Image (tube, rainbow, N blue to C red; front, side, top):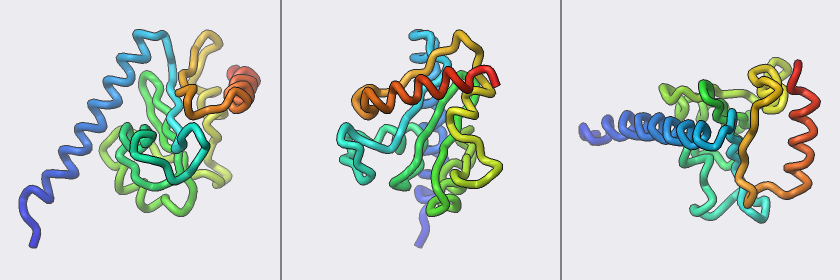
Length: 149
């Protein structure tokens, strides 16, 4: 039997997600960041991670095991694979987060998307605990290469 609280919970969660994104954007402005990348990983690059490291789930409400959220000052997107297209569509509804379906020809990569919405002076934030130095260096090089397209 459904109760009225079952109907209220998704609505309340959506507003919590929107508030979390607003808070992240305030943090970004304070630290002069134009985007923040939030992957689904931990310091050991695991896919199934302890709750403490579930930042992507927390910021987006998307509970699939794979995906990356990117939040800019006025847009947000989630990149995930085909296992989660239906789930992500439902969980992201009314959050302001756009679903980007990985591995489809029309879907830009995160770097391509950022290259289209960024200016040369923009900065990207990441959690250094969940990205290796090599991954960060590669990302920085890719962003510099795609920034002007």
